[in-house]
Image (cartoon, rainbow, N blue to C red):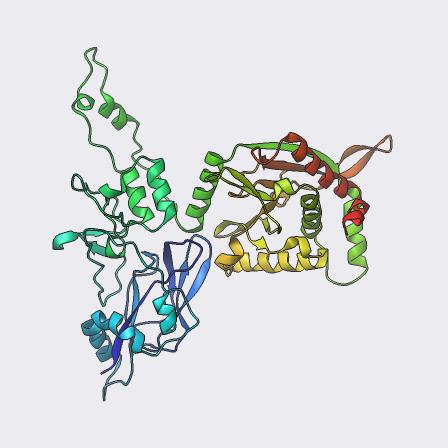
Length: 481
C-alpha cells in the first residue's frame, strides 16, 4: 500500500505568514514528480510557483483558488510508493483520506528532494526546520479533508465548534490569569496587536495548532466593542447616545475590497512609513536638455539602448557615494543610524497587480549599461508577475519615476525602512533662461523625500543639488567614474 504524505504550505521566506492560492497546477489523481510545481500562490511580495518535494499521486487538495492559507496549513496529500494492483486515481484518493495522519511519521523515510523549500528536503534539513511556539493550552490542528475547501477551519480547544479562518469574528476571551507562551511567531502580528492595544492572550488563533495570524488580530480590531448601558439610551437633554450616533453614521453599502496580497503589503508598509518616519521633502527644477542629448549620442554610437532611468540610476549611485547619510536606515531599538555599505537601488514599477518596488542589487558597482539591463529585466518580471521575494526586498534607496504618469511633481512616501527616495517628474519643453536668454529647454522637476532623523536639510539639499547638476551637465559624472 502506498504511503500518503501531507505537503503543507511551506515557509516562503522574508517573514511571509500566508499566501493566496491563485491557480492549481495539478488535480486529484494526477501523477507528480519530485520538485514539480503544483500550485501558484500570491504572497504579499510576489507570485510564486510552489514545488512539491514528494513524487507520487495527488490524493487531495486543500483550498480553492482565491482562498488564503497560512504557512503550515495543509496544501495537498501525495500517495508515494507502489500502487495497489488495479488501482486508479479514485482508489488512491480514498487511500489518502484514510492515511493522511501518517504523513509526519512517514516523511523521513519517503522519497523527496533536498533542495526545495523551508521545512522540506533532506533529513538534515527536516531536523533544522524552524520550530513553532506552542501554546501552554493545546490547540487542535486543522483537520484535513479530501475535498478542496474554500477556507481552513480550526476547531476550538476541547472539541467545540470550529472557527473559520475568514470569519469576521475570531476573537475570544481568554481565561482570567492565563499564563504560558502566546502562540505567535510573527513580529508583525505582535506589533499590530501592541499598536492597537490588543491582548494576544485573549485571541483564539485560526492557524495550525492555534497559531495567531495577522487575520486574527485584524478581525479583533474590526470587532465592535460591547456597548455600555449609557450608549443605548438618550441623554437627559434628548441627545441620542453614542450607539445611536454610530448607527446613524455607519455605511450601509459600497464595494469592499480586501487589503491583502500586494495591495495589503503596500498599505502596511506605507502606513508604517508615515507612522515611524519624520519625513521632509525638497525639490528643484533642472534643465535636462544636455542629459537627453548625451543619451541620444550614446544610443547613436551603437550597442544596447540607454534609458533615461538607467542614467538617473547611475546619477543616484554617484550622489549616494558623496552623501552616504541617505543610504542608511534607523535602528529604533538601539537608537542608532546604520549607514549601509552597499547600494541596493529600488525603483517603483506600476503593474496590473499593483505597485511593486524591484531592487537592483549592488547598483553602486554597475555601469550604465549594466543598470539598464537589470532595470529592463526586473521591469519585465514585474509585468509578468514572476519576481521572486528576494528581488522585492532589501532595498536601501528608491528611485521613483512618476513622470511616466504625465505628472511633474510629487511628495512620495519613503519605502520603509529606507531613509530617502528620489522622485523624477516628466521631462517636457518649458521656457528657461539659458545663457542669459529665454529659450525652450527640456525641464524636469526632481524631488527628494528624506528621513529627517538621518540628516538635516543641508545634506538633503546637497544631494539633490548634485543630482540636478549631473542632469544639467552630465560631464560632472566623469569625476566619479
